[in-house]
Amino acid sequence: MILSQGEVGMEAATQETRILDAAEELFYGRGLQAVGMAEIRDASGASLKRLYQLFPSKDHLVEAYLRRRDVRWRASLAAYVEARRPGEERILAVFDWLREWFAEPAFRGCAFVNSFGELGATSDAVARAARDHVDALRDHLAGLVTEAGHSARLARSLLLLVEGAISTAAVSGDAGAADDARETARGLLELESARISGAG
Amino acid sequence: MILSQGEVGMEAATQETRILDAAEELFYGRGLQAVGMAEIRDASGASLKRLYQLFPSKDHLVEAYLRRRDVRWRASLAAYVEARRPGEERILAVFDWLREWFAEPAFRGCAFVNSFGELGATSDAVARAARDHVDALRDHLAGLVTEAGHSARLARSLLLLVEGAISTAAVSGDAGAADDARETARGLLELESARISGAG
DNA sequence: GACAAGGGAGAACGTCCGTTCTCCCTTGTT
DNA sequence: AACAAGGGAGAACGGACGTTCTCCCTTGTC
Image 1 (tube, protein in one colour):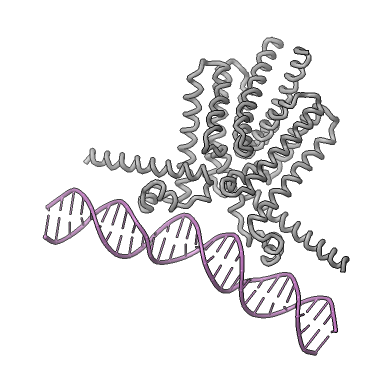
Image 2 (image 1 turned 120 degrees about the horizontal axis):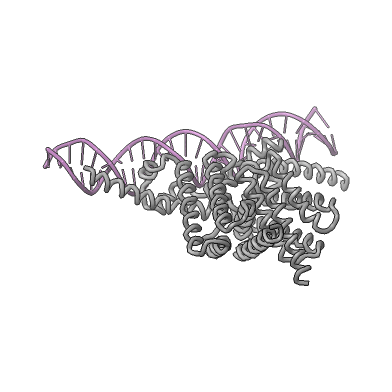
């Protein structure tokens, strides 16, 4: 009983994963409202019945997509960054990671900014998910900044550079925005160091 | 005949203006796909017949909305900035203007980033309008930067700060992103000056 | 005053979509 | 072998939306 429940649970989990994988690719690639439940059914291989058993409505699925993407996106960034030595290298690595992301064919901007623009005015869940993502990213950057011995104010500047690079790269189709952001961040680090030694 | 044609033309123009005003408020405030033609008809006071006479499809109306908004948005920014003395003051004025915009209750991020996220994958017209807007904004910033005697590279940094501030302010609902961007820009200007005198 | 032209209001049409329902088949149990 | 349970495929339902059509009224003209 317990084992079979476990198996049922695992099967449900992998089916849930397949559904979320399909939803993520479609929602991110084409927009929330442009993708219907039937298309997610086709892409995931699940039946509509199962789909609605696991996610009672499209709104639930959208929110689950955003929440999972937030966790994965930040985990991927964190893993990439933590491979570098603590300090300024890690801050600059953020923009190396962005550059690789921008070069992916599927890149289409920030999933949270896009979702906020599409449904943020209507759906509190979407607006909250987007805000939580930005807050978490800011916190992450603040951790890197303090780790490097700089003032927390720098984290807010970096957040603007990161979000600006994402939007600009998406709209203009130019991955070079990551390099611009990296160079700008390097300048800000240089400035911080100069201010510390100068005003020390 | 010519006069009456002129009057007809003017009436059509003001009706077109009313329609575009309604479309802009609704499209920007709630998203492109969340607003139906019937709602634009109600908000503009025009009949559906007239609406389709002036804009043969919703796609046409969406593109007209984006094109007009681009012109007006940049004109408003340019007018604000040109009230300051040429040089770095004008660069910083960009962020003062952003701050006032962010404080408006209707502020909901960059209309072009939002539209791109919603329909950019499907509609070439939307994708092009968004890209043209970003290109025009970058050109405008480049003009301010060269006017202030700085290198063109700085314009790309400023573009990232502007777009990042817009996205962040919208999603997090915090107009303070404009101040963060302004402070960051001030740092970059300081750095440019130091580099010029230092490396001179 | 008859009448053509054009515009307004809104019904109508076709399509799409989120969600539910029906029917059938499989599978495991007694 | 009979049967209950559950799942899959897809039809069905209700509503929304883009677009067109119908009908009526106004207005300007002979």
